[in-house]
Length: 175
Image 1 (cartoon, helix red, strand yellow):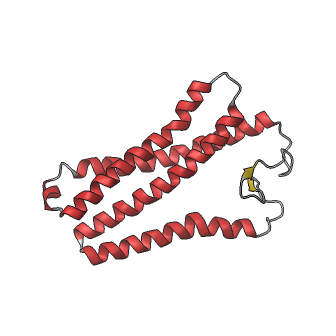
Image 2 (cartoon, one colour):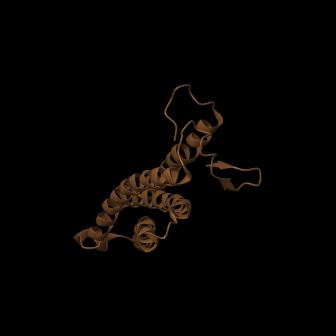
Image 3 (tube, helix red, strand yellow):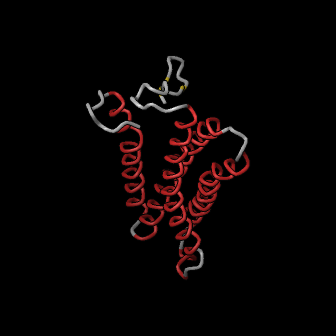
């Protein structure tokens, strides 16, 4: 996908990346790639969610101060949202199966995955912050928050933008 001059997105021409595939073949390939991304996202989300759910049943949970408990509740909510978002494309696929809507499904699912990445980023940053805040101190928690935020912004936002601005390597694999 590329951005048009109005800031929107449009699909690349079916053959612009050197592939000889129909729109349906491209949709099938893109759906398979989205499913792989969703599998990774779901695994990470399940691990974070499991950790968060176990925390409430630990003896030291009552040692958390009010801010830490509030952050914890927000993180549990984010984990639920991340799980729901990651499962939405699968539910949509099941509901639309056999209705010849895969290109629409891929487009909408790609947007949901982008939103889920923001939620998972916030969840990961929040969990890191909470753990450091609770185990070390508030100042260390804030440092962890800033460091995690910078790392996510650098790797998930800045690096892809830098790569988009550079010319493609010759003979390399294309998306």
